[in-house]
Length: 103
Image 1 (tube, rainbow, N blue to C red):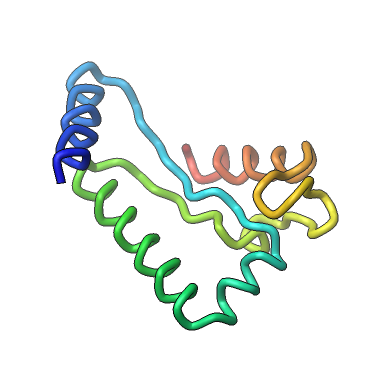
Image 2: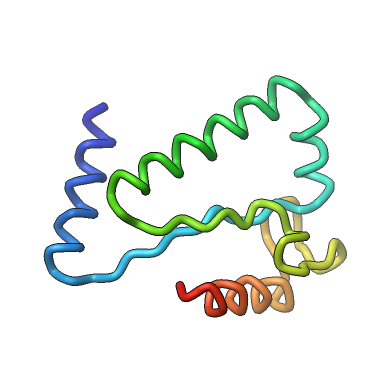
């Protein structure tokens, strides 16, 4: 689509200006992620979206880290405001894992 082309052009422009771009898929609360995983249509859409984003960023040469599962970086289930917004301790865990992986 034209939006994808514009986005890729923007990423290429950043690269030509030697601006480092890194991306990550944001975490979901464990209960929200379980709800997605337990519904076949939701899971299929979720998996398709992740794959599409990985392909898109891959075309642009931009590293994309998947942090959708909070278990991958030691987040706790009780340190969230809602299904998508973490409290500071979980946010610090995200920053820590991004730093450790060089992003």
